[in-house]
Length: 212
Ligand code: 2DT
Ligand code: MG
Image (tube, rainbow, N blue to C red; front, side, top):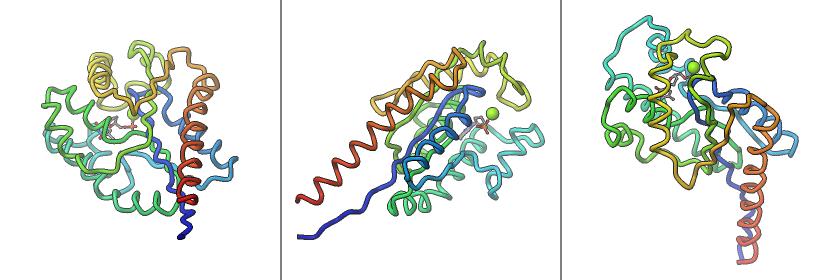
């Protein structure tokens, strides 16, 4: 009998419109898993420091123009560039909590009128997350939060459209959390329940491997 104790890392994606509290909750998840002695890294898309991410950053800051299709492909390329690294990390047991992923890619680009299926197709084959935590926020509420409006997409009409597109992507993998109350702790409590569930499931899978 071969004993396989290798634990695959969890891939946790946080999604939502701008100012929905994703970065704050990513940090909370990170701290929570550190406390549990888990290996964990925080990732973020777009990765504004990378070669492709720099082009995206200029576009978001209105310092350059791109066609809707070209910017969509750049966002997608940014993910493909790191897909292998992501896979290696997960396989070596590192958990990854990621602020935005391909779901943002599809929601934001299709909100401009690009075909939903075409938007999805460019990310097809990327690693799938174990869960998509969606922080549900009324776009009108988002407007009142700090630093809103600094970047290209931060306008009420556009964010409302993005929110509608996100609704079309929700499936069984998603855990939707109402974050309109702006309460960091109560939002995190709900996330924690989901994470505990995933950790437990992974432990059970590991036990099964040993018994085989
Ligand atoms: P942040 O505000 O989180 O830095 O995001 N976006 C993001 C896309 O249009 N497509 C994508 O694939 C991703 C990952 C969402 C910057 C903006 O970029 C948008 C907001
Ligand atoms: Mg933003």
